[in-house]
Length: 484
Image 1 (tube, helix red, strand yellow):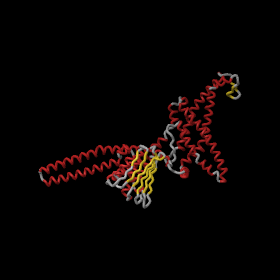
Image 2 (tube, one colour):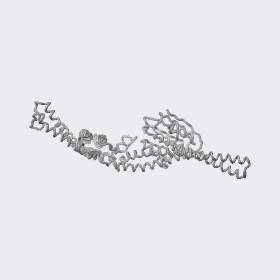
Image 3 (cartoon, helix red, strand yellow):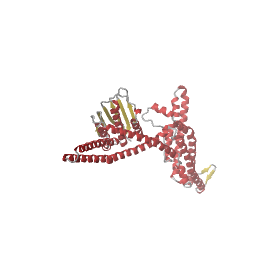
Image 4 (cartoon, one colour):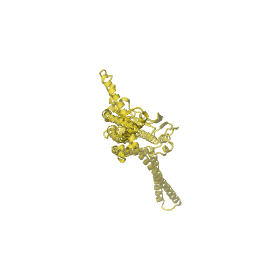
């Protein structure tokens, strides 16, 4: 179990500058991710308008299609959709009749509301059923509402256009498609019965078997023409099933999938694109950290050593009495000054490297990284993190930079004398609270640091909340799922 407790004293503002640089980097990368993700979303919308997989398989093998697995999947989809549609129609008719009958006393209004929202579960089931024939799933067009209560969810769903498109699909589109699916299923079953008709005649002999009303079949050999008719029916039914399935898929994409004008339709692809880009920027940030650590930092170390050797050489010459004493003393002073500036630049660079992505976060986890930041912070910080081992990388990174941003704001603007960092994992979610005793009145919209962090938290399906009444205290609360 990783725990960390620390109380930091004032050791300088180098860490604060490093955190500022890291926060600016976060904001810039998040803004770039949003722009690129919007372009990716447009590409995703184009992909959703691609050809139906069933039609592509039918065009590739038009003669052999009824003998392939694709044809069997089409039949299974149509049979399942027919049963689902029939049950849905019966339930909706019953609910509508009850709702209208009881609406005069007010009891039927909830039933009518249930009818209005019936497209939600029906659409969800239809999207799942489409996975039988479509490798690419139809995305959910509705906005995610994490943490919203039942009334808020109800109001949001009633305002969404996707809800009414799903209802139209359930009430207007599904019934005729269900009827067509039932008819095709009956045709397939009858054709299958004709195929095995010689066996049926043989088994039931000497009983009379009539495959056509009024015309008895004397024996199995006389039933062979019916077998041929049944095979032809199955073959043609395979093509008909493919065409009917393609109509189902296209209507489902049109009515059950997201559209560009739907905020919820954009959120899914946008979130996925932003998550991919956030991972890419995280990798790029770590590459920059390695380049600074292995390149510029090592050159500054070598420069400091070279200046130290030069200062030592000048002191030896001055002690031996070589050259102009005043000139030597002046040169020695300049070298010492340059050496001090190189050391200062090296310390600032080390702080910047730690701010970009601290090695302790990678090696030892969130508790150790936050404890290290607390020890270097100009305001005393009490850290109380009790975590069940390591968390997913994106969660640890987001939580770390949230803490550093909150500590930076406390040191710069709040006038706080103490800061408390408290964190626990509860019900699979990391809950992190940063509180300072400053003057309050913080405005999260005034800067880009917290806004960038909020965007990163949204990618992880978490929440970032700031409370800062005038007079304090200021509290920042982070909740993010630990599933990543």
